[in-house]
Image (cartoon, rainbow, N blue to C red; front, top):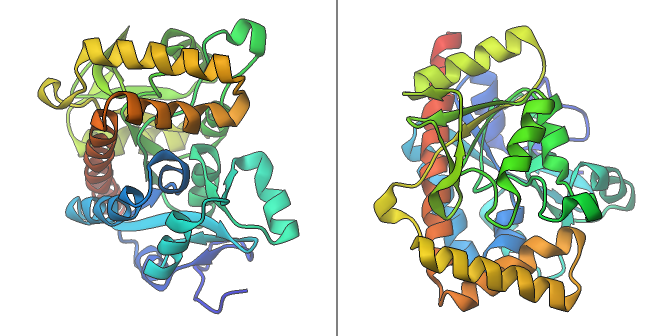
Length: 313
């Protein structure tokens, strides 16, 4: 067990970095970051540079970054540079959703946290804002496979704001939005009523609500907390001039999904397989867009966290 200080409100088995613990104790803004993006979403060595860039973007937004991972069975909220190195370099690092956390804890295993487990651990630590790239959701052909990300159920129970660029492009977006409605997850567009499509600005689906500022997003989260547990998803689209070319997007997504089907890839292995295929098929274009959208989400999350902290004072 690490000797690093813990926040008073955190569970006994949760380790906070000194910077994160100090910020939470002071009521300063903190933004949670997942580690699956680093371990399984981006290729090496690009993932290590991206880790620093994403944390810097959170700081540019006015908040302290708290990258989350499980190391030797202990959930860490806020990582040292050496711990980030470990997450980025280990090719065998497990991918841990909420259901996997008890196994990792009991057997003292290490793993990168997904959206669902990051949200759970962030909320347990007292962090109210989380930045990621894209959420998981309902997969295509789900009527036959019943393949739906645990992200959705976790967010229906977890009170925090999640800034994202929509859901991953490989998913069934309309079905995912229907599930979020059924689960009473609040979804707002950031300065748009068009739900973003991850690599592209427009998924083809619309939203009922939007917010125009970080302060409005923070106010929606505060109101949600007063009513009932559950997340507020802040969908932040890329500007049209920064998105992946839509024709290229459609072509490489179709090719990636076909490759996964041909290879018999199923379950949680689908996303890293498809992302790797997209990177190669697009000659690196999807990687550049992926990093760009995560950076934009991280900075916006920092601004929302700052607004939330300011309103609480």
